[in-house]
Length: 89
Picture 1 (cartoon, rainbow, N blue to C red):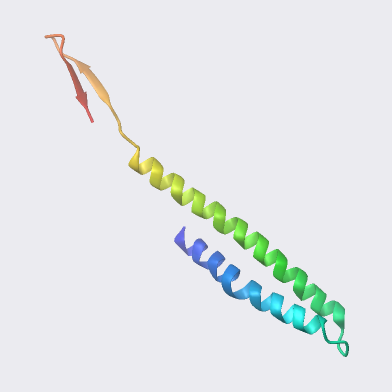
Picture 2 (picture 1 turned 45 degrees about the horizontal axis):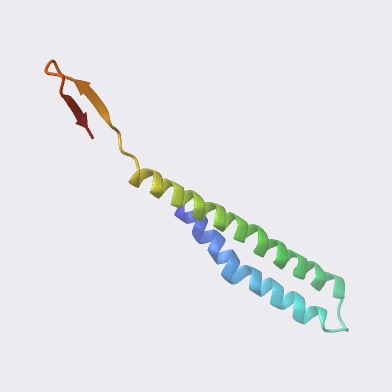
């Protein structure tokens, strides 16, 4: 679970900014094929959006798991012959 978060974080913080930078700087030059750099820009934006979404989804899942483990209290009630109730946690 944390491995996926690390990969998504790496793509959000390192890969997508590099793609965006190369795509933007290359698209400003007029001597090269500009459409290849537009493709890199589009790829950088899609990597940023998709991996941010996956990172958020994994973060929410970890939070739900932690919250579920902390709040998981099992109560079992037993009736005794003396009309006492025993609660076992």
